[in-house]
Image (cartoon, rainbow, N blue to C red; front, side, top):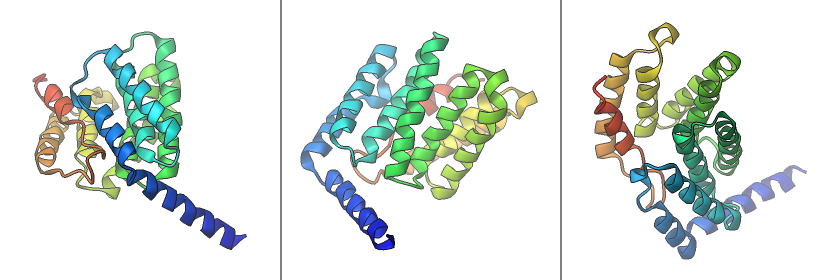
Length: 213
């Protein structure tokens, strides 16, 4: 039984590496990633989500398409105003990010998005979901920072959380801005592991810094 589990893990890892080294997969991902950090409309983010989901359906052993579908759900949530649709976006984000986590465990990037998804649940219904999902969001973000202290998205998200959270709930806009300024420096030095690994967030960080709160 133990040997069977080890064999499964080795085989699964080999399939994941094979997907990452597949030129057609990489080209498809590169094409879909173009302009990701400059999208501003619900329709544009939905189109990207659909494109990543099609890749995820083909490349079932690759974590990045699952991850990017999760990212799209997070960004769509920020643009959507219908609570029913927002709830569906929460569920879909959780689903795809859980899949990304299972395909690539203990990845800082995945934990950043899982934290953002947990925060979505809080924003959807603070009274009903705050007590459960608030601590989960904080725990996931702390884990993301511990897994990779050089990840600018983890620092940025911590800053954004403090920036927008009311003071009575632990928010601190001054500290939040300090962290986003730190993230700015980290983005300037950040080198993604590959052409399709996460490198988004700088534009969002700059937009919030520019709010001048």
